Image 1 (tube, rainbow, N blue to C red):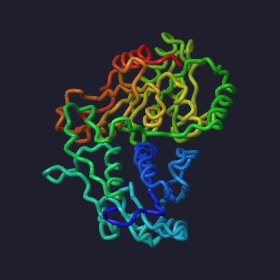
Image 2 (spheres, rainbow, N blue to C red):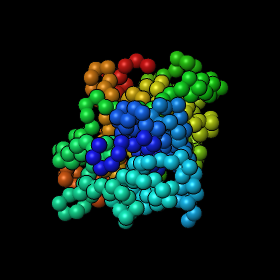
Image 3 (cartoon, rainbow, N blue to C red):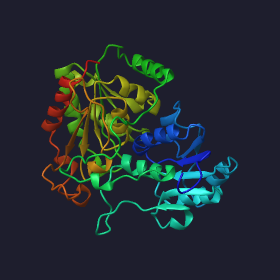
Image 4 (tube, helix red, strand yellow):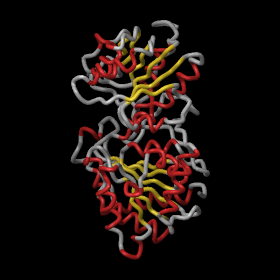
Length: 380
């Protein structure tokens, strides 16, 4: 294997966000398949471990708190005794590279970003355009390329990412490679108990609305989510579950409260019901539809085959082009709506925050996309 010995004890430093970790699962599966005798562990922030709980992708998961000047030292002391011979950094930060250096891991592979090349034994050049700006590259391919370097195989051909529209770019990921997440029987039982306690029967048709996001600029207006919920209930007899983190509970309640009285009792606030990442995975496995902003649950839903409407404002969706499963009729399982579909393909929505405000996505377009998916998708 070029670039170093075949890893026997490999530490993968996982991405910080839920969605990014989901997009890293094809790379984790590739490593597991290519290194059948290796011990492979992950290092992650709290919460990410719940996402991967029960998976065979990793033999062990170390959780570290990333906050504070001493955080890298504490994280390094936690993993040093495991005697890893190789670290693969799917993160871009200086601090995570420092952790692997302080843990005395001999080989450290990662992108040369955030002034950390000196901490890496194998600094990999990230994809750039001719003018040195960052090349618009889907995260699934970005992680896949690091595994190529680690395994001594051909790198990703970045030239495939030639944009022809402002919604998607072609993936370098091999055909038939998808993201993956485990859903345990315990997850399913917890979901059934949670829904049952709310009076939602096992035969109910479920729609999930995901109105949050780590950046308020990504959030489609709450009143439009309320209007969408009314339409899904009134025209499609669905139960609507509004998902969010505990910090987003008030936002979720505002959407429920914005639904008219005849339908409001069919809207449920998941943060108030004790929802977890485990129950969210089980819910995505069962739901007939999710409508979501650009945030982690989008990737969970796509992985588990939920018909999906994804809303993108001033963050370009091509950074997170993902492989999605087809519906029963062969059409894509995800419909992406962007704030400005007339944006030239060579430009990025990130550079046009006003032109690409998420509130420019009209309610009628979201309703049309949702109803189209419900019509084409398999019965659930």
